[in-house]
Amino acid sequence: MEIGLIDDEFPIRVVHTGSRFHFGAHWHEEVELVYVSEDRGRVGVNSRTYELSKGDLLLIKPGDIHSFLPGTGELIIVVFRLRYLACGFTAERDLQDLHRLFAKTAVVPAEQAGQAKLSDIMKAILLENETREAGYRWALKSRLFDLVVQLLRSQAVERESEPEAVCAPHGKFACIERVCAYLEDHYDENVNISQIADHVKFNKFYLCKLFKEMRGVTLLDYLNRLRITKAEWALLSSGDSILDIAVQHGFNNLGSFNRLFKKYNGCTPSQFRKRNGMDSAIFER
Picture 1 (cartoon, helix red, strand yellow):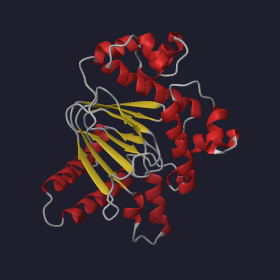
Picture 2 (cartoon, one colour; picture 1 turned 90 degrees about the vertical axis):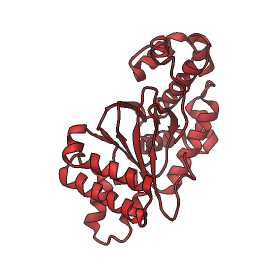
Picture 3 (tube, one colour; picture 1 turned 180 degrees about the horizontal axis):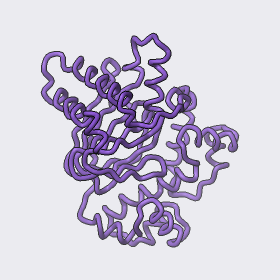
Picture 4 (cartoon, one colour; picture 1 turned 135 degrees about the horizontal axis):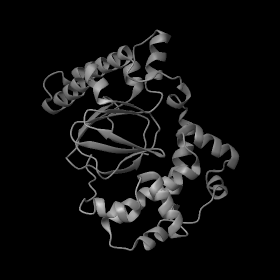
């Protein structure tokens, strides 16, 4: 879980990445907007990889596990707390519209983003954050409201009702955070669901249901995705053999590692290493 990067008094954060940007799997309770300003973007969300083109806008809902994969270019990223925008609203309909808008992770293609002026708004947010002239915080919040209005009016994002995923109680988030922390420490071991359930003191059947509800993927899918993500960094940063990397990351045999790696990346580990071998992991955000 990513914490401590948002100012409680002004919970909006703007990041302008470099031409190559890698960042490991994480999650938080804030909405994240990712605009591809140059080249392309590769963003893993839960068990899915989004292959984004220049001008695309990705909306990542609170609680979704996401990472920025090798091959990602320049991005404008805006992270904000949904309740900060909702503060002051009294009409239930307005609140429901806001929650539904960010109730799922979705892509707004470049053409639609351009027509709805979303590209211009994201660039305006970046400019305000970089120049920081008098009143820039009000300007940032105003631009976010502009973006929400355009998203609602253009219907660029299909509106589905998933309020539970957005407004999940903190207790559920805390439980899933403990599960994710345990897997982070033990992903390279032969762990099973019973061990994980024992660690967090939950019934394993309820835990599986809760994890799927909160993350949109099964526990096993999440664990496999975590192992593959960790293996990606090893493929890029070490000279170890592919078999050694597979074993080091919790896989019993090379066949299952190759199969899952290709499922998530569309290529074999050797192809991935050859394709991205000159890139180095960049953790600046």
